[in-house]
Length: 345
Image (cartoon, rainbow, N blue to C red; front, side, top):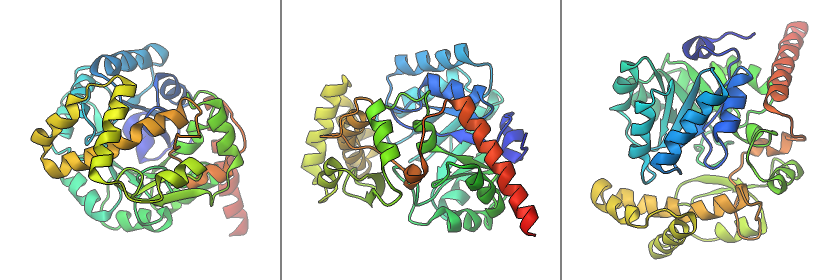
């Protein structure tokens, strides 16, 4: 057992978290990670209200351990899904990509805890003022929307400005990485790519095989895919999707195509123009334009047109263990890493 402020805060055995990855962090994977002694975070941003409630209840049927939900507040329907999570009194709420100042008081009212995902010291200070219990600090190496600064620098930089417990994300997937994160000032790690390539993950077998075949260099990081700095796996489809910036009209058209393909109501995109303002609605259109390609790669194993969100740690993924096996391996590697440090000293 490795106890840190994060394990104490959330009542978990190990300081290892599965973040809320769209299409990946479903009830089965989340429960498996929590049962293995970590904290699984259920991705709900892409779900309907009914699906969100069903998935939360399915997690509870599969585990009696703590778990959380992750919601990107920019996504259509995010606030409605968040309301469901609050009604269900989910133990941990992790929010990102939006102002969550109203969330912590409501979660604390039923005894829950909150995590804010941040990529800078400025974001961390804002989250602290909003009363969050912990930070998920996402470095440049991460899949999807990591920041401009690598985890090696970002973690200690944010530790300088806040005393909140921190979960380090971006470049973590081994026990040695866990020990390094703790040394830098974090209290736990989130391992997105590594959990996505576990036996309990819903990621398609073809995609898991492709992840294991890729090196740490084979990713692309720019703003062309969904309008925000985003890291994806390098493939011919990704090369094409990130070759040039999206125009607004192309982003809106692709968003509508994604809405039709996934069965989501198209009016939600336009209602957000009035609810969030034009600037936020434009960001949402760009984000929505990427969702269909993400699903194609992640769930369908289609890499002819699909694009896979992935972290640089993909180059260190060589097998597909189940959650319990992976957790025990991580902790064994961490013990070995700490022993090596003592031996060197």
